[in-house]
Length: 126
Image (cartoon, rainbow, N blue to C red; front, side):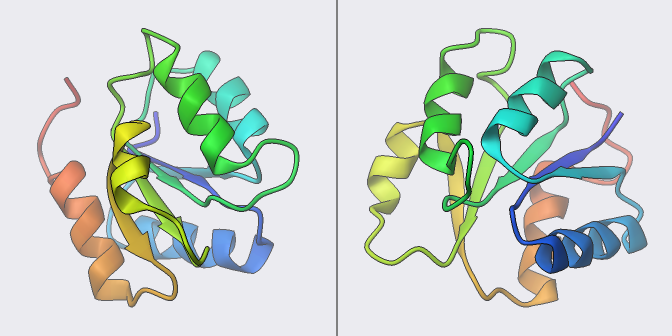
């Protein structure tokens, strides 16, 4: 079971995030778009955190948040939006269910802080 699900369309960023979280002792997995994320989530135990890009093909982050909030079994999973998208409204993202927003590019320390906040070491998943 993954502690963190990374939803990111850029393969290089996706691989770097996986490596970062795995090297910090987090169980992590990654998919390339919102549709793949929903399919992943519906077939496994829920992760403790979803790190979500907004601008992706197939299903973008906005659509994913809407779908996730409509699924009672998944709506409680915290989602941190990780985006370089300009002009987004952080308040609106929180209204759609995002727990937090991190702007790209973010340094490793900021990303690890987010992981540690939502997935503290030794804490069992609720």
